[in-house]
Picture 1 (cartoon, rainbow, N blue to C red):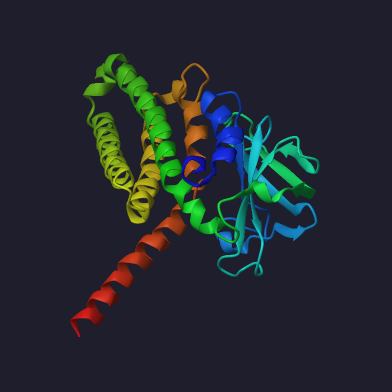
Picture 2 (cartoon, helix red, strand yellow):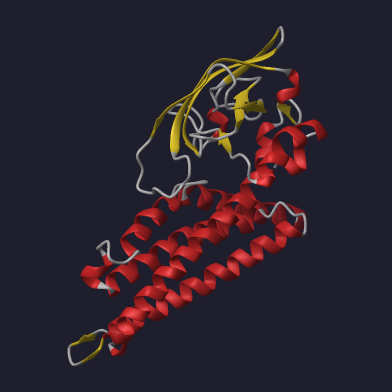
Length: 297
């Protein structure tokens, strides 16, 4: 997002150290109810222009990587009211800016995210005009630049985790003896192995399609929604079957499967719940059908 939207000075200050690996960033949009969540138009954090720049006030939570981040990208409302479309602006702010307070880590099923998922307060945070990322009131538009690629990198990471879990389970059932044969020779186990292979292949195909569209410069909104929704659910199925194939070992700490199960479950919520993506996919399909009907009349 910074590569596409930031001006040269912002790239030098924020993107260069990020790309070098010297700092981490945190994207601050999600808020406690009734604020922004699956519905970003509910954005309640507000930035008001005044002397010396913009003053930002609001509360965010589930901000991934907030603890230890070098800077924040803050989504705040600069016009309109919560529930209205548009009116959001992104601001860049170093983490040590007065008024930014990382209050606590929110305990979640997954534990692998560096910097945790945190509750963050912005109390009268003053940032200069130069902190505006892109143009004022264009924040929701710019967020789309981030969301598609971010969702696909999540798919890549969690698909790798699921593949690892599957490999562990297959290695186990290939040798484990039970009921007069190896478990891997039993029909019920073979069905789970086959279903995992199918889910892995289908997830990879949808991921490749979405990334191809993104690389062509397309918005790929539908392709990324389809890939993310299918992957989030397929990856959970893959890990869950892998746990089942390994029996007691699957839920123990002796294998990585129990931890993987906890890590992949939140993906059906993170970066848009499956239900929201399904709603968007259906809305696009129905809208296209209506447009086609009108064009034919």
